[in-house]
Amino acid sequence: MNASAAPSGEAMAPLEELVRRAQDAARFQCAWISLLEDGCERIVAARGFAPRDLAAGESLALAVADLREALFVEDALRSAWREHPLVVSAPRVRALAIVPLAGADGLAVGTLTVADPKPRALAPAQR
Image (cartoon, rainbow, N blue to C red; front, side, top):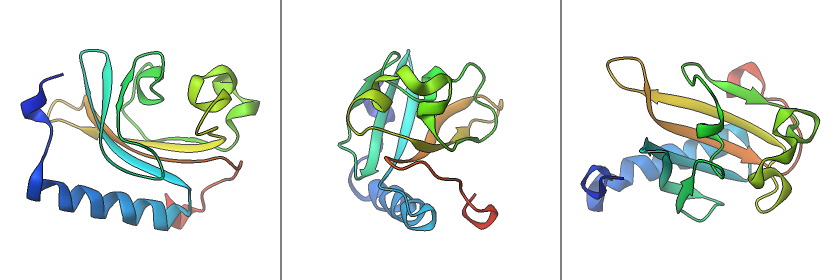
């Protein structure tokens, strides 16, 4: 991961505000913005989840083969996600939404993710 690509200082405030708003709108326990590069998901702003780098096997976003549209999972334990590390261990994700942040070429360069330990559906207004 190119450390110079990660925002810092004053550039973090808008990202932190976006994470706060996403978490509040979805009413989910965790929310984060990440950058995707070289098989790693780098969490650059987070609430309810400690920012860290997630290897491909730990990342929810990198587990999606073609992340071009938002993904919504109401109950990860009742889906193909049931054995994912973030589902079976902390933060024990049950519901999640992954929204790709795309570059000009349409490929995801990052994500806005919300996750919660309780299964639930997002209302249309929350999406």
